[in-house]
Length: 638
Image 1 (cartoon, rainbow, N blue to C red):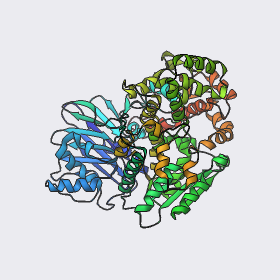
Image 2: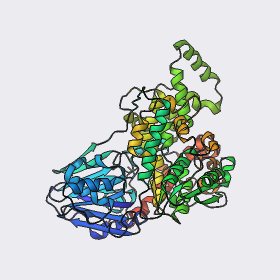
Image 3: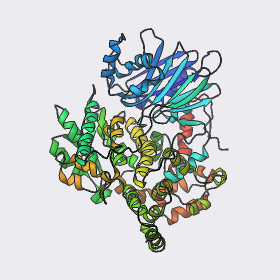
Image 4: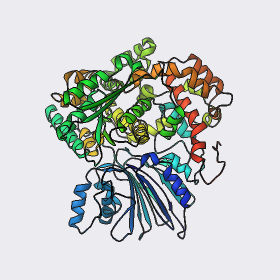
C-alpha cells in the first residue's frame, strides 16, 4: 500500500513540470500511506513520486518500477492479488523480472496489452504509468473504487495524487470551492464522485482510466458495475454454494503478504464469515481485532466478537472506549479524511485501525456485503416498495392516502420511501439529510443560486436509464455512491492514517459480478436482510451471529457522542463570531437548527455535516497549502 503523486505535461515541448522540493512535499504529505520507502522519477514533461508501505517483497519492491529497457515507469497504490499468475504468463512471453513485488508486473503487462492492461488485474489499485517512448501517461483506478485517485488539469499540466492534500501541496491548484459538490454533500453527508469539494479537482471514477497523449486527455471506462442478470435456472442452494466458493477464493487470494496479517472482527455476520474462511487457510491462529463503545449499550458487539474469536481459536485483541470521557480531535479527523464527511463511523474505524496496527500491517474486513446483499433498513424498505408497486392501482392509491395522512412522524421517512416515484427520490427520502423546505431557509450566497438537485443528478447518472425493481435500483445506487465515496473513503483514509492496509474480500470484482446474478428475493426475503449470506454462513459461524439483527458499526454510539460533544465542538466551531460556512449558509438558521436539534433526529446528521464542513474550511486548506509554492495561499470563495 502506498501514496502516489505526480505531474504530467499535456502540450508543448517537454520541460520541467515541478520542482524537486515540491514533488517531495506532495509525497511527504502522504508519509502515513508509505512510511517504509519513497521514490521518484523526474524528466522533462513528467514527475512521479511515491511513498511505500512494504507488503510484498519488502526489500526489493522499490518504486517506481521499470521494464527491461527503462522506457516504462509505474507507481502503484494497492495490491494485485493475481500478480503471481500474471508473472508466470508474462515470463512465457519473454519478460524478465528483478523482484517478486506485485507492482513489477505492470510495465510488462502494459507492453503486452497496452492501455487495456487494467482489465487483467484482480485487486485494489490506483496506478500511474509513464511510457517514455510514446510520451503517454495512464492513470487507472480499480473497479470498485477501493483505492482513491484525484486529478486536476491546470493549463498544460495534469496533477494527480492519492489524496486531496497532496494535490493542494503541488501549488498548481487554487483551493476554490465547488458549490454543486457542497450542495450534494449537505444532502448526502459525502461528496459523490467524480466531483470533489474543490472546483476543477476530480476523482477518477472506479473502473476508469485517464490517458494523456497526443497533447490531449481522455477518460475511458474499462469496467462497469454489473446490473442484475438473474439466472432463473439456478437454485437457492446452488447460489449459496457458488457465492461461498467465490468468496473463499477471494479470501485465499487476499491472504498473500510478507508482513503480519489479521482481521477486523465486529461480531456481525460479514466479518465473522471472513474470519471463518481465513481460519481454514491459515496454519496459525488468525489475529482478530475488535473495538466497542460503552455508550452503545446493547449495541456493543464486543461479546459477539469474543464468541466468534473463541469458536475459531483466534489470537484476539479488543478495546472498549468511552467517547464521553475521551475528547475527540475533530481537526485531526478532518485532516485524515481529506474531504468533509459526515459519518462518525470513521471515528470507530480509526480506533480499530490504530489497535490493529500495533500487531499487523494488513487486515481483512467484511465491508461491502450490505451493499451487495441488502443489509440496511432502506433495503428492506425498497423490497417492500417493490411489493407495493405490484399491488392493484386502486389499493395502492388508498394506501398512499392513508400513509400520507396518518403515518407517525417517526415513520415519515419510510412512508416517503414507499410513495417515492423513482429510485433516486426513494434514496433521498431514506438517506438524505435535508428537505427542500429546510434548504430554502438555510442556504445563501452561491448555494442559493443552485436548484438543490446536485445529489439527485449524481445518483441518476448511475442508473443509466435502466428499468429496475426498487431493491435492485437501491443496491445499484448504494454500491456506486455511498459505498465508494462514504464507506470506502473513510476505510482507506482511517486505515492509511495508521499505515495499515485493509483488504475487502467481498469487493473482489469477480465476487461482485457473481452476486449480481442473485435474485432480489434471495437478498431481502420478507423482513430478513442478507438472506443468501445467512444461508451461506450456516454451519460455518455460530447460529446466534447468523440470526442477529444488523448493528451498524458505531451507529449506536453516535447519539451519545453527539450529546456529549455538542456543547464543546458545536459551540467552538459553528457558533463562533465569523464562521467560514457563513459564505454559503445562513448563520441565524444554523443556530436555530442547533437549538432545536435532538441527538436522535434527522437534523443531527445535517448539523454534523455543517460541523465537518466548517472544520475543513477553517483548518484543512491552510494546513495543506502551508508548504506550497504560493506563500499565503488562502481559500478562494467566488
